[in-house]
Every structure is written in C-alpha cells, then in structure tokens.
Image (cartoon, rainbow, N blue to C red; front, side, top):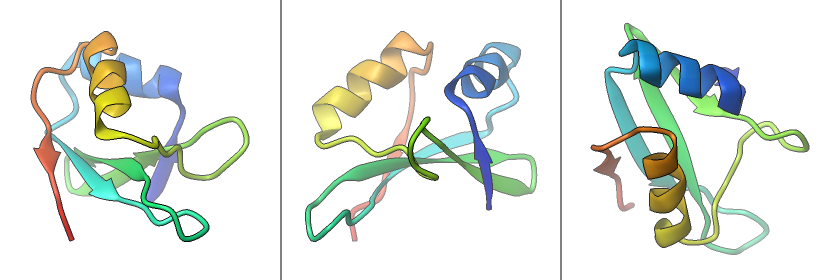
Length: 80
C-alpha cells in the first residue's frame, strides 16, 4: 500500500483521480483512531503525516471536517 502526503491527496482529489475514500479504524496504542484509505485505479494508498507513516484522527467528526476542507464530499465508513 502506498503512502501519500496531504498535498498529493489534495492534488489527486482536485484532479478527480480518487475513485473511493474509505474511513477505517486504525488502532493506536490501544486507542481507537481513524485512518483514510484511498482507491487510486487498482492501487490503494493511505495519507501519511510528517511524523508517522499513516495519519490518524481521534474522532470521525474531526476527520469529516478535514475531508470536507480538502474538497471531498463522499466517503465510505468501514466499522470492524
């Protein structure tokens, strides 16, 4: 699975290259957190942060606000 920066994510969204956005649980030190998985053609990618390989959010509300600010309108929620 590829890792992309937030800037690359914005470019891909604006270009219409992201086929699907999935929000899924990402356990972090025993705490519930959320990560974004993108479908890009046949490949999948996650968003990386400056400090970690996968950027995570503590709440779905904060993640939804971030996605909206990036220009995303629809995302799939995976609850495991």
